[in-house]
Structures are given as C-alpha cells and as structure tokens.
Length: 88
Image (cartoon, rainbow, N blue to C red; front, side, top):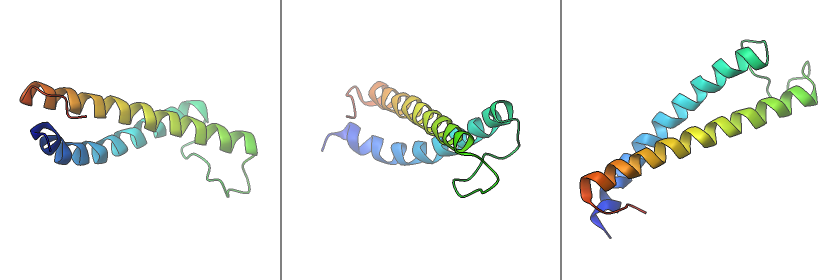
C-alpha cells in the first residue's frame, strides 16, 4: 500500500465527519431561504406535499455531494503536497 493511501485513510475519515456536519449546516441555511421554514420536511410528514419533500431531498443530496467532493478533493490535494503522490 502506498504511503499516501496510509496517510490519507485517517485524514479521509476525519474529513468525512467534518464534511457531513458542514453540509448539514449549509443545507439548513439554504432551506430557510428556499423553503421559508426553519426545518426541512421529512418524507413521512403528512402536512407537506410531494413537491416540497422531493425538492428538499434533492437539494439536500446535491449540497451533501458537493461539500463531500470539495472536502475529499482538498484532502487528497493536501496529502499529495505532503507525500508527493496522489492518494487515489
């Protein structure tokens, strides 16, 4: 196993936890603007319609994916700078 992969493993785990927390916060703030509500709807919320529930889920997924990709890429770049090899 390459040294960069060994270095990246714990970094990747830590970054995954951080990216989830960051993405959750970003989604909450975006939903306040888009959904005009403090809390996003749950799929089983009887008082919310299909459109609102699917919009919230789509937006949440897009934000989580974008934040995760940005954080993963940043972590891989940092490991590359430290070790000289790409961790992938």
